[in-house]
View 1: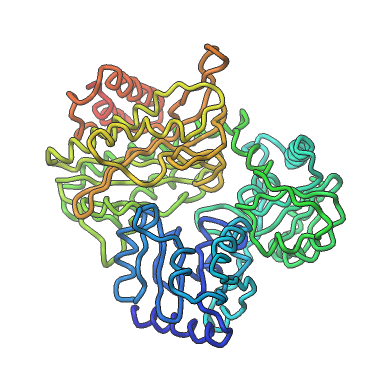
View 2 (view 1 turned 180 degrees about the vertical axis):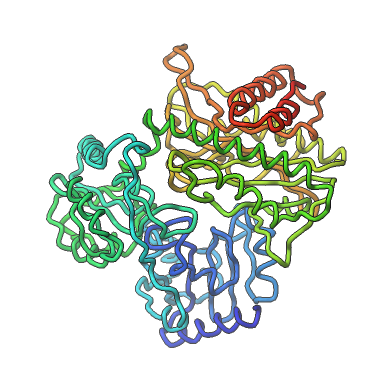
Length: 593
C-alpha cells in the first residue's frame, strides 16, 4: 500500500509542476463541507491512505504533511508510516499551522492550488490573508484531480425519500416559513443552504448518499417567494417530486446552482461562510449583498420540537434495551476467548436491528480493547482485530439510526481484573461526566463555559483530553451536528431548552488503555432564579454505567447519589422491555453503590 500512496503523490506532483504550482492542499470535505463524505469526495483518503474523518494534507514538490486532531494521532501515525507523509498534530504548541508550513516551505511570489468547491469561504479568506504576507497566491480552480484519480467513484445517485411528519413533527412548508421569519429578523431576503443535514431537516427528506448519515446531496435556496432545491434528477422519484410540489418547492438540476446564483437579482443573501464552499460564494451575483451569519435552519433544527423530543426518548429506550442484551451477552461470552473487537460489533448490530424503526448504525462502531481504546476513533480491521480476555477495559462507542431518533453512546467496560491506575483513571472520567450532567446554568450560557466541569477532575491530576466534551446530535440525521457544542474552543452559540448534546469526557494513554463515558443530554428548563431563568441537563441515554472500575472513595456523596438515581431510572425505564433473565442482569448492573 505504501508504494501505491507514493505513486499517487508523485503523479500529483507532476501535475503541480505542469501547472506551475508550488503546493496543493486537500481537505476531508465535499462541496457541502460535510464531516463524513460520499466516496466520490474521499480524495484525501485516496491519496494518503489515512481513513479518519478529519484531516488535511499538503503536498509540495519535496514534502507531504497531514494535519489532524487528537482523535486521530495514533491512527494517523500508523496509517501514514512508510508513505513519506509527515504527521502534524493539531492543537499542540509545536505544530505549525498549514499557512505557516507553506510560508516556510515555498518561495515568495509562488502560487498554491486548491479545489475551491471543497474549501469554505472563510478558510480561503483566512488562508489568502496569511499567505499574502509572503506574496503567495492561491489558484482555486485546480482541475487535474480526475486525471490522477482515474477510477474515481461517481457522485452518489441514490434516490431521496420522504421523512414522515409523524417523526418530524413539522412540515416543510412550516419550516421554510420559520426560516423566512428568521431572515426577516436579520434584514435579509434569502439564504442558500449548503449543509446537507440542514436541507434534509428543512424539507423532511432523507437519503443514503453518505454512509451512516441519511442525507441527500443538494443545495436549497430560499427566497421571499420561492424555495428551490438543486438536486440530480435521478434522485427525485415521481412521488418525491409530487411531495415537493405540494410543499411549494421547485426542483432544478444540481449543476445549475452556480449559474442561478450568478443571475440572482435579490438585494441580499445570507451565507454561513464556514458552511458554504468558496466556489459557491464566488458565483453569487456581485450586485447581491452577501450577509455572513449562522444559518437560520441550523438555529431552528438545533431546538427539538415536542414530537422530536418524544421520539428521542422512545429511541433511547429501544437502544437501551438492545445494549442491555448486548452487555449481558458480552459478560457471558468474554471468558471463552473466542470473541473479538469485530465479532462483538456484529453482535451489537444484531441486537439493535431487532428494534422497531431501526434503520442502521449512526457511525462506524469503535470497539477498542486495552491499548486500542487509547486510539480515540479506532476502527478494528482483520489485521488489528484483538480477541477479548477477562481482564482490562473495552471501550465501546456506538450508535444507531431509528426513524424516531439518533443515538450515540460510549461505555468503558471492565472485562475482568483492572490495575489501580485503570480504576483511578476510570473514576476521574466518571467524576467529570457526573459534574457536567448535574450542571445548572443561567440562560445565555455557552458550552465553552461548562466544558471545564468535565475536565477539572483530570486537570487536578495533570491530565487532559483534546477532543470536545459535547457535540450536537441530529434527529434521524448526522450524529455530529451543530451549531451548539461543549468544548474548550469558544463557540458563541448559547445552550437553549430542546438542544441535545453529548456528554463524553475521556482519557487516553497510548499503549495502555482508553476511557470514555458518554451519554446524551437534553437542555431543559430548571427554575426561575436570580437575574432570570436557569437551565439543566436531562440525561436521556438509558444504559448502565459499568461499576467494576469505580473507586467509591473517590466519589462525593452527591456524585454517588447521581449515579444511583441514574441507575434507578435506567432500570425503571428499561425493565418493562426485557425478559426476566435480562431484568435480573440489569437489576444487578444498576444496584446502588
